[in-house]
Image 1 (cartoon, one colour):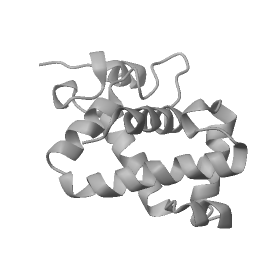
Image 2 (tube, one colour; image 1 turned 90 degrees about the vertical axis):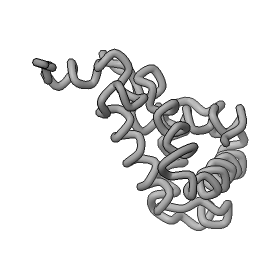
Image 3 (cartoon, rainbow, N blue to C red; image 1 turned 135 degrees about the vertical axis):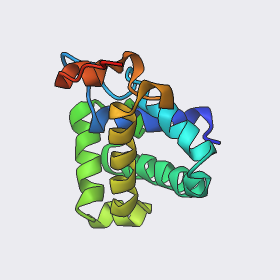
Image 4 (cartoon, one colour; image 1 turned 90 degrees about the horizontal axis):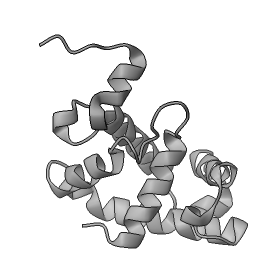
Length: 136
Protein backbone atom coordinates (compact mmCIF):
# COMPACT_ATOMS: atom_id res chain seq x y z
CA UNK A 1 0.00 0.00 0.00
CA UNK A 2 1.05 3.63 -0.27
CA UNK A 3 2.74 5.09 2.81
CA UNK A 4 1.84 8.51 4.25
CA UNK A 5 4.42 10.39 2.16
CA UNK A 6 3.24 8.69 -1.02
CA UNK A 7 -0.39 9.56 -0.19
CA UNK A 8 0.59 13.24 0.31
CA UNK A 9 2.36 13.17 -3.05
CA UNK A 10 -0.65 11.51 -4.70
CA UNK A 11 -2.91 14.17 -3.20
CA UNK A 12 -0.67 16.90 -4.60
CA UNK A 13 -0.65 15.27 -8.05
CA UNK A 14 -4.41 14.70 -8.02
CA UNK A 15 -5.23 18.27 -6.90
CA UNK A 16 -2.95 19.55 -9.65
CA UNK A 17 -4.80 17.49 -12.25
CA UNK A 18 -8.24 18.41 -10.84
CA UNK A 19 -7.73 21.57 -8.78
CA UNK A 20 -10.41 23.03 -6.54
CA UNK A 21 -12.32 26.04 -7.80
CA UNK A 22 -16.01 26.72 -7.16
CA UNK A 23 -16.27 22.93 -6.89
CA UNK A 24 -14.22 20.47 -4.87
CA UNK A 25 -10.84 19.45 -6.25
CA UNK A 26 -9.67 15.87 -6.45
CA UNK A 27 -8.74 15.51 -2.78
CA UNK A 28 -12.04 16.80 -1.36
CA UNK A 29 -13.93 14.71 -3.92
CA UNK A 30 -12.34 11.52 -2.57
CA UNK A 31 -10.24 10.80 -5.66
CA UNK A 32 -7.19 9.69 -3.68
CA UNK A 33 -9.26 7.34 -1.55
CA UNK A 34 -10.69 5.92 -4.80
CA UNK A 35 -7.19 5.42 -6.25
CA UNK A 36 -5.81 3.85 -3.06
CA UNK A 37 -8.74 1.42 -2.98
CA UNK A 38 -8.23 0.67 -6.68
CA UNK A 39 -4.54 -0.08 -6.06
CA UNK A 40 -5.50 -2.37 -3.20
CA UNK A 41 -7.97 -4.37 -5.26
CA UNK A 42 -8.63 -4.33 -9.01
CA UNK A 43 -5.33 -2.74 -10.03
CA UNK A 44 -2.94 -4.08 -7.40
CA UNK A 45 -0.45 -4.78 -10.16
CA UNK A 46 -0.06 -0.99 -10.66
CA UNK A 47 1.01 -0.32 -7.06
CA UNK A 48 4.78 -0.66 -7.67
CA UNK A 49 4.54 1.71 -10.66
CA UNK A 50 2.67 4.26 -8.53
CA UNK A 51 5.24 4.00 -5.75
CA UNK A 52 8.15 4.42 -8.17
CA UNK A 53 6.46 7.24 -10.09
CA UNK A 54 5.58 9.23 -6.98
CA UNK A 55 9.19 8.99 -5.80
CA UNK A 56 10.38 10.06 -9.26
CA UNK A 57 7.99 13.05 -9.35
CA UNK A 58 9.35 14.10 -5.98
CA UNK A 59 12.98 13.74 -7.17
CA UNK A 60 12.16 15.78 -10.26
CA UNK A 61 10.65 18.56 -8.13
CA UNK A 62 13.61 18.55 -5.74
CA UNK A 63 16.09 18.65 -8.64
CA UNK A 64 14.25 21.33 -10.60
CA UNK A 65 12.80 23.58 -7.89
CA UNK A 66 14.45 22.54 -4.63
CA UNK A 67 11.23 21.48 -2.90
CA UNK A 68 9.24 18.30 -2.53
CA UNK A 69 6.41 18.10 -5.05
CA UNK A 70 3.89 18.26 -2.19
CA UNK A 71 5.48 21.53 -0.94
CA UNK A 72 5.17 23.30 -4.30
CA UNK A 73 2.42 25.77 -5.11
CA UNK A 74 0.00 25.10 -7.98
CA UNK A 75 2.14 26.68 -10.74
CA UNK A 76 5.23 24.80 -9.52
CA UNK A 77 3.36 21.50 -9.51
CA UNK A 78 1.96 22.18 -12.96
CA UNK A 79 5.45 22.97 -14.25
CA UNK A 80 6.77 19.64 -12.96
CA UNK A 81 3.88 17.67 -14.47
CA UNK A 82 4.42 19.45 -17.80
CA UNK A 83 8.09 18.46 -17.66
CA UNK A 84 6.99 14.85 -17.21
CA UNK A 85 4.37 15.07 -19.95
CA UNK A 86 6.90 16.57 -22.38
CA UNK A 87 9.61 13.99 -21.56
CA UNK A 88 12.02 16.76 -20.60
CA UNK A 89 15.51 15.37 -19.93
CA UNK A 90 15.55 16.35 -16.25
CA UNK A 91 12.22 14.60 -15.71
CA UNK A 92 13.41 11.50 -17.56
CA UNK A 93 16.64 11.44 -15.51
CA UNK A 94 14.58 11.55 -12.33
CA UNK A 95 12.77 8.43 -13.56
CA UNK A 96 9.37 9.97 -14.31
CA UNK A 97 7.01 8.58 -16.91
CA UNK A 98 4.49 10.31 -19.15
CA UNK A 99 2.76 6.94 -19.44
CA UNK A 100 2.21 6.84 -15.67
CA UNK A 101 1.00 10.43 -15.75
CA UNK A 102 -1.68 9.49 -18.28
CA UNK A 103 -2.73 6.55 -16.08
CA UNK A 104 -3.00 8.71 -12.94
CA UNK A 105 -4.93 11.37 -14.89
CA UNK A 106 -7.39 8.68 -16.02
CA UNK A 107 -7.67 7.35 -12.47
CA UNK A 108 -8.32 10.90 -11.22
CA UNK A 109 -11.11 11.37 -13.75
CA UNK A 110 -12.60 7.98 -12.88
CA UNK A 111 -12.55 8.81 -9.17
CA UNK A 112 -13.92 12.31 -9.69
CA UNK A 113 -16.88 11.26 -11.82
CA UNK A 114 -17.47 7.78 -10.34
CA UNK A 115 -20.60 6.57 -8.68
CA UNK A 116 -20.10 7.66 -5.06
CA UNK A 117 -20.70 4.05 -4.03
CA UNK A 118 -17.37 3.18 -5.67
CA UNK A 119 -15.34 5.37 -3.30
CA UNK A 120 -14.92 8.61 -5.24
CA UNK A 121 -17.13 11.59 -6.14
CA UNK A 122 -17.88 12.33 -2.49
CA UNK A 123 -21.36 13.73 -2.08
CA UNK A 124 -21.92 13.32 -5.85
CA UNK A 125 -20.56 16.87 -6.23
CA UNK A 126 -19.13 16.29 -9.72
CA UNK A 127 -22.53 15.05 -10.86
CA UNK A 128 -24.11 18.16 -9.41
CA UNK A 129 -21.45 20.28 -11.16
CA UNK A 130 -22.38 18.89 -14.59
CA UNK A 131 -26.12 18.97 -13.92
CA UNK A 132 -26.62 15.22 -13.62
CA UNK A 133 -29.53 14.30 -11.40
CA UNK A 134 -30.06 10.84 -9.98
CA UNK A 135 -33.67 9.88 -10.58
CA UNK A 136 -33.82 6.43 -8.99
